[in-house]
Image (spheres, rainbow, N blue to C red):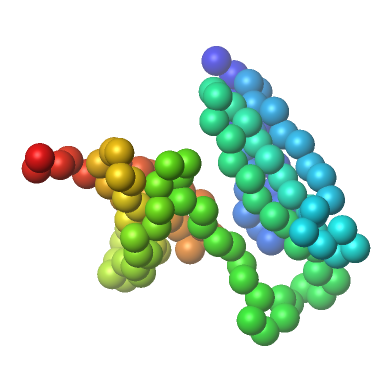
Length: 124
């Protein structure tokens, strides 16, 4: 297996790209005249989508959403909580639930990058 390639971005974040993944970009359908782009990555029969806004200044305008988190397919977000400050890279926890599966906890960095996910066991 070939190691994933890292691409530097203007914000200093890195995007991991697996050789077996496919990436597509398109203009935002929600606002065709805006500078927004939609990035979709697909690998191992799973996909993720991000809307990317292109801003002219190095500083983001007040009130700008840096990132948002969509629930996993088939789940709804129950709540998102900030973690307790400490040596961990985890900045937020997202708890998502589904009517047909156990709840899921996702750990996220301050940048929005997912660190891990785990399913909670059920007492049924």
